[in-house]
Image (cartoon, rainbow, N blue to C red; front, side, top):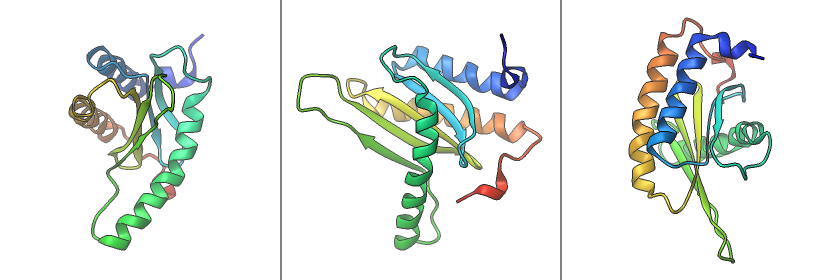
Length: 151
């Protein structure tokens, strides 16, 4: 059964871009969402990820974005939030991971979860291409996404 968002062409385009990204870079998950937490597209590629992870990612990111913006304004009020990297580590031999939270378009964010075995340079290089693709899709969209809710 298809949900409403699957009928919206920009959402389909974003989902296709996420799938194509995962074919080039072995990431665990990608979530595209508005700054107020509305999930536009989400893909999990690692079966061990918790259920409904995209909801946690979008809600927790709001706090990280706000804190980051406050720090940026403290240092230089003319600059804007672009991205934040979170690294997780383990005392054991289990796999560790990173989360890269990026601004990809006006009021639109992208969270990428990937194992640390994947080179950060590869992820950031490919994310630049994905950012451009998502930005083009969002800019063609006739509606502005949650403009009144920017932090």
